[in-house]
Amino acid sequence: MNYEFLDNVNMSDNGNVVNEFDAFINNNPYNGFDILNGNANMNYQNNKSNINLFNPYEGYLKGNAFKDEYKPYKNYKVAKLNINSEKEEMLIAIGECSFMMHDLNLYLDVHPDDMEALNKFSMYREKTNELITNYERKYGPICVKGDILNKIPFAWQENNWPWVK
Amino acid sequence: MWAYEKRLQYPINIKKKDLRMAKLLVTQYGGSNGELAAALRYLNQRFTMPDDKGKALLTDIGTEELAHVEMLETMISQLLDGATVDEMKAAGLDSHYAEHKNALYPTDANGVPFTVAYFATTGDPVADLTEDIAAEQKARAVYENLINLTDDPDILGPLLWLRQREVVHYNRFSELLEYYQKKGY
Image 1 (cartoon, rainbow over the protein chains, first blue to last red):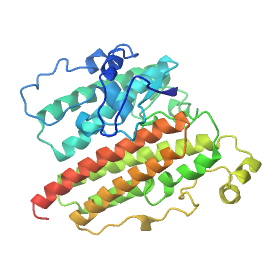
Image 2 (image 1 turned 120 degrees about the vertical axis):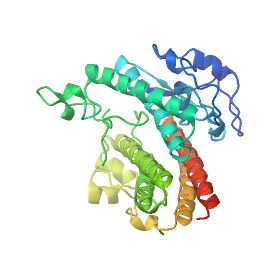
Image 3 (image 1 turned 120 degrees about the horizontal axis):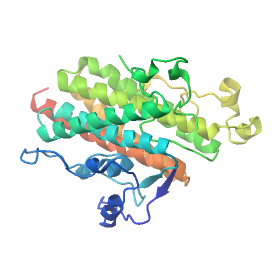
């Protein structure tokens, strides 16, 4: 995994992102996450809400789920994550989805009656759980509550300690 | 209680040993504006938040700060990976080596150990949240200082990301403070 600072993204000090980024996002290198890249399958459009979310790919790279709150530093570009394996790809997908869930969690703590935020939160929560289960089946536990720990040798202690390269 | 997830909130993969940056970055681990102080600040203050919104937000942001502690620990650990005694000496980390060898220890960039004197609890939600809002701004400023001190993309990526989290936390704390002030706290 390494970071590549996107040449096709120009950011001014006031946080405006030029349109090239949209094209970049539409070429999302991950497969199978189209459901997360738009407003698919949601029926909240009629509810009044102040949230305006990035898609998970862009939100995760930027560290901010909320378009109106994003504040870049000087003219630093957004770091794209270059992925070298399916394992990394699956882990980043969990990162993206759980990130959106978490940022909506913080928002809902203060705005508990926002139906659109709740619908989005629920969508990302379900998707995060699914992605974690899929990852754990292939690459080992993320959560000690995972079903895959029901075998010898005990897999929790093995590998994947996140600070080890 | 807490449940650990065996993954980082945002990926870290530092390939180049850099003892100078390890020495500087440690302040966002164990310095006055660092992540450990933030986590403990919110996880203590939550007990005297006046309603469920405050208890929830301080619990959840405090928990995220623990994930940021882990990111900083990972960065420092990878920056120090394989450092020899001579390299530690050359980087001004011989005093660290004397006490801790290559182990992690939460200090600021000058080696001053972490202390709970870095944060307060007053029992007053307006006073505590005003501190939290300031803490997020100070942490953002320190991340910017650190960003200015490196050009390694493997360090810049995570620092830019962590800086942005301070922006989001600042906004949530500001909304909560405004809500409490409207309620007359």
